[in-house]
Image (cartoon, rainbow, N blue to C red; front, side, top):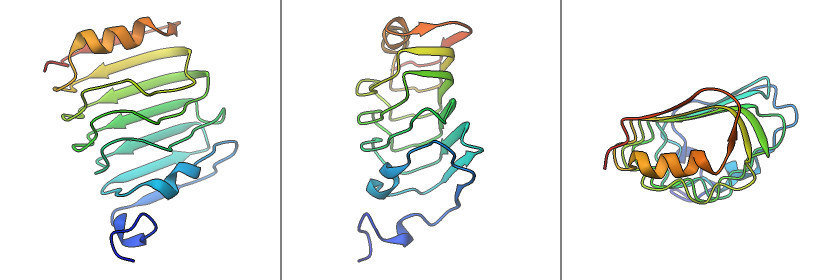
Length: 147
């Protein structure tokens, strides 16, 4: 059925998933639109870029994914529903102009690095509160998130 969550035409640009290892991507079945790229290499790094969905409801990553980048998704309003492993090497959330909330991320407690930049509807205080709730061993960059 065109436009349904299972319609392959709802993801017209490249969808590349390679060497998944221990990563659980069951949530891909619930994506309404993926008008951009979703890349996973060697189960360690995942980039979600230029996608057209409003949240990440049902998106589950387990221990195999160590670095997650969410960038340039113009329709993304929240990370609601995103389930992450308890520890990751890095998380980057950048250039998502409609993003207003980081609430809803479950599982994550410890990070190596955190970058939250250029999410113009978010606000640095929201990003700082998110960072303060985590144990972060390394670099933290929060800038350019001005509502």
